[in-house]
Image 1 (cartoon, rainbow, N blue to C red):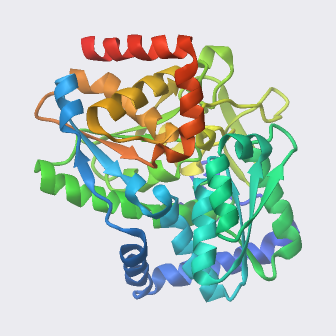
Image 2 (image 1 turned 180 degrees about the vertical axis):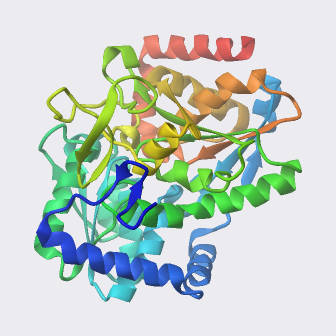
Length: 410
């Protein structure tokens, strides 16, 4: 990254003049914290005592036997406090908010996990909290909305646009323009204007640091491949950072294939040919947009992957061919979720299940002496109604059965 927040050609800070000083203040606070030798140890103590870190690396012995190829290991971010990787970032930003002396936090959320984590952090540190969430996501992620409200946050449904994550981000920025003196915007992923991508990636790097130590202890050497789902990209950047400097470790990001890339109803910016370079929401990256530069509607069964853009850091790593990108369809996700529950007694979030899909496709062709890691970014409790509805649909159920047989045969 250069001083202006660019990763190659991607990133930057395309912000209104009214926010310029706010971003300068945030950048200074972040750099001071990162340079303070006491800050990271303070952060680790907080995550250890409050958020159950380090999260375990689980050897999925039954799935490994089922596929008969590489040993499958699962990094269990579902066991992090609030049920996902999101707490890593928000607790770190909470410490920054304390340093800056601000009293209120705002955030956007899609799947609701970032909203719950932010509301939890606000309750712990005593901040007022407002969460913006697309109206469609409010409906499909009702359990998380309930917990945000009970934790003391005000949840504002966003009714504009596609009523999903990109629209929630827009509303959060509108709030910040009018409240920046006492308010901090807790960006939930490695997107947005500089310094957000760098800052969120730094806090999420705790995943990769742990996973590297854990796989060496459990397997005796580095994994051959690491898989992570990619919406904005914070969980992926979190685990990838543990292995970026190891060229023998292949990094695979799995985007939302929705109903299939060929249908146009998906959220795959890098895996197919639909993404193109653009500037929106304060940064330059690969977006799903039309020929006039208007952002397209996206689709995914997983609310947290239903986003039009992707981290500029991941766009750079994709362009450099350091990270390979694929996509998983909604139906493949349900099949992988079913298999994981039945074989391991583990319930991945729908977002996380995208990474399981690609790992299951590739594991059988790998050597038995190799290992792969799946980053399980969160647990599936929040998705109970979506999953239940899917299993009621006879066509989905038959696909799940057929796909399970295919996985076994492959």
